[in-house]
Image 1 (spheres, rainbow, N blue to C red):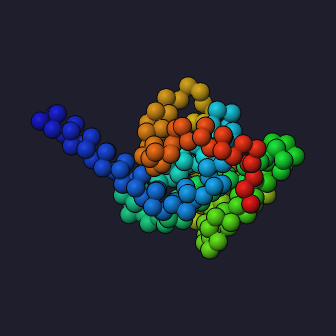
Image 2 (cartoon, rainbow, N blue to C red):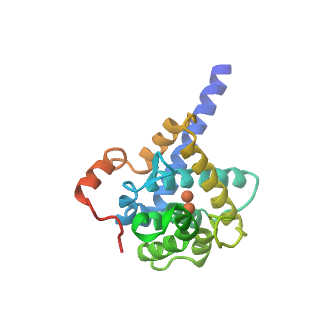
Image 3 (cartoon, rainbow, N blue to C red):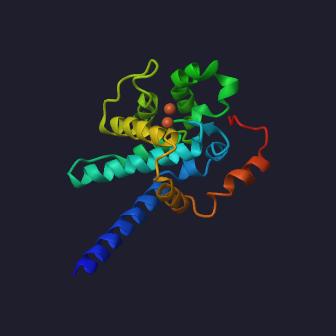
Length: 205
Ligand SMILES: [Fe+2]
Ligand SMILES: [Fe+2]
């Protein structure tokens, strides 16, 4: 009896993870396929992560929060949320050439992320743009997250940033497995292949 319950719970968890990865792939296809996102595997972020790794972590955490809220009957626009999560830090690409130090990068990268986002998604939804612009609140001159999606992205970003920095956190294997499902065949060795192919080019226009 107990093993049946455990087996059912495990199957349900696997089903939910499969749906989460499938939906992130579908909603974020334009971004995941973009050169800028691939370059983001080469841009270091939060000491031990890359911009792309961090963005995927933020995206996974955002959708997990969204699915939790959906169970409580709270409606979330997941397509906009996924796009914003994958795009929110792309402004950090080529940061050494764009910003005057870390403080300037922290304060200014959200606007730069919107610029790159519009080059990837020309018809970027204004709600997605606002999510990107407000994700760093309260750092920099950004507006306070107001919509549900803006609040989720801002919280997921801070959570993912903390786990990026916290060397003793042990959830990395779980996250790595999800990322491999989101980017099958491209994740893992991708960064090395990309670094060889695009050496020296870090700021896609
Ligand atoms: Fe950011
Ligand atoms: Fe971030």
